[in-house]
Length: 313
Image 1 (cartoon, rainbow, N blue to C red):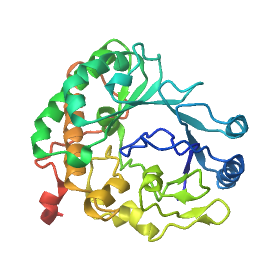
Image 2: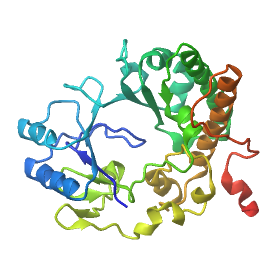
Image 3: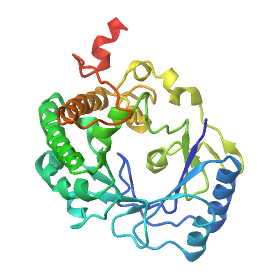
């Protein structure tokens, strides 16, 4: 069931996920397209997320944005307030993160492993940090130990903040502690994207892809081919998995396996490294006498890829 509408206010709107929007020429969404998108969202009672470019948007577009309840997603340095601030790479991290803000950091594996200590000021001030590995499709067995070590160090920072009376959230560590079911992005099922060309797409990555294929419009309504394949109950691996913090990115699935409902090994292994790190964080908090209301028990597993134990299912 559709719940969210992501609206790209420009072809050069910031990426807040695995795909890159770098190098896209600016093309603002026309006001009449935005008006139809907002009308569709209000008619369907959808949560609206506006994704901004680095520069100003036209005045008529800015006025329409304020006509509906929404979330603003902006790149760091963009004018005006943002609900979510996107940072591309460690060099873009603000020297003084805003107190109580929500950030998305897009970074590759090598930079994360080498510069993870630079996240301490963010975790000390921000309310939430979403970490996005932009090259997770190249995650290799050789990265497992480095990623686990990185997450353990970040878990130590989080535990220290909890001990000091703060409760920052880091998606790859904190989310699994409280989840009771899969919390993936839902592209193609619970969310769609409206692009500046006036058409719906499964998500921004599908719009920016060379073979971009629209899946309806605000006037025609959504029309996702084989829509059942985007649902969890049609994902043979994911529906049995309990790495519930995994984004289960359908765009990455298509890139790595050619099937939107089947993840590649890289995505599964990275998600299970995160799951195990969350389990260790829970133990660390418990040993420190810090109890999280609603925290779930995370059982230790003896595998990193569910495909390796498919026979036991």
